[in-house]
Length: 417
Image (cartoon, rainbow, N blue to C red; front, side, top):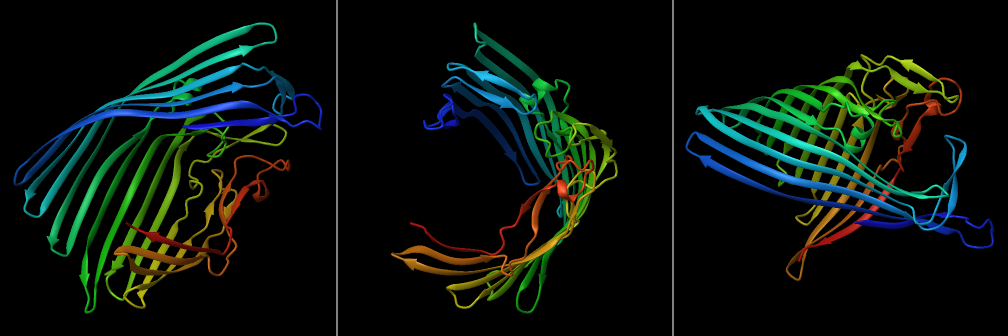
């Protein structure tokens, strides 16, 4: 639960008197549910079936504590607020589901798995207001609701070549339902759905002094009826819509050595190619409030780098002291759906030292850490969906930039008892 008193206002026009806090707000999240599962297993067969029921209430309410007025920059008008006015919203989800898993060994070295879920989700958006128009008080209650029935599954198989190598493949689906408040504004919203295809191998490679664990997979993911704001990912004030479809394909590789050895490493590499295959015309708002329509089909999804590398090197100086270095690198990416503003990639080095000890028979761990050792200056992210400068065109100067803080030092300890 979260409670606050906020929005200080000058209610008497006297700068010598303190401002008055005119809003009192509460936020409360309540969840309850029950789940039951039954398993049946044999030598070559394993199964599970489950039932689930749950309810989630996300409640917000506020009360005006004093009379005041506020200027609306969109309408260029003043709005009057009166003490005693209240508002209440409840975004309510009620879910009923049946799900299960089935595993079967068709061959001694071949295991197949099927997971499935049928989901019934009722979404309600309940609003209540108690308002004063300067003459009379009025009460308003409104409820918008929608019910979604979704099915998802995963079918996979693993073939064990020998004790050091497996091959695996799978196809899986998923869904994301609209939020209740978005349904209130756009009742025709559909659920976002996805289908993912993956194939790969995992195993262990023995070497003279250690071993290497690896996993390599390639995948192709399709998203349909993507839920997002009409004006772009970060057009927070825009209503949500099913803006289009996308296709993402890539490769993921992880390799690590035996962490118990004096020297070890962990390497993760990702290649990602993500593009829009369908999209509503992109409305770009200019400074003069006019709208320019752009076609983004075939463009890269924003903030998706094609290459990402994360490498950890670990070295035990003694049994109690461990040094860790991390090299993290990302390639360039676009900040916007229109693919107009491209941000450079970056590389950073992080270092840390850890000391392990016993104190009164319990584990003690102390560490010192430096992130971005060479103090590289780069943009962590950039958000862009409209002409912010009034130059009547989108360019890098319109982006909202999140800058990395540079070199950062940390020290800490952990004591378990």
